[in-house]
Length: 218
Image 1 (cartoon, one colour):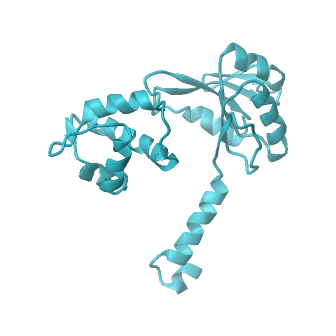
Image 2: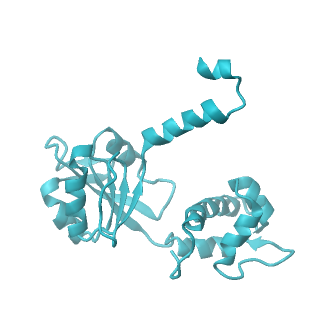
């Protein structure tokens, strides 16, 4: 990310812009307006212009934005111009799915190591990723210089493992467990609760959609 602070809401939208700029680049487009971006990413054009303004003059009035220049800028801003290795902690059903996926749509992030307590899979390679026993966690994180991890362990083990991770120097945790883990101020946590997101979606469909109430209750 950039060396100066920008609003968190803006930071969350930057990957959306970057993804669509990649699409435009691959399609051979040379320029794009905030209006076209707005229609594609479903963010109003005024918000897009405000987001971009935090980084200076990225476009020209009456011309729009140069796709290649903007793509290169956001690639650097989002650290997409170099590879970031991450570790996966917990290779259950969700962990296996993440290993199979392994961020194949991007060349900038890769799961390079995974850890589990199951002796049947430790010491093996799954989807091209070596699986280490948990007693090698701190050593491998240090040796491979990994400071970002994905946490997909059982809830009861989440905090103890998090404590080990923070002591090992991890700076970022993508937390797929329902537990809201406690970390020092030096560690950033992104919580991904699939059940909560699905329940929220169901609630909004039931209470805010245009479906007749009779249909919504069926």
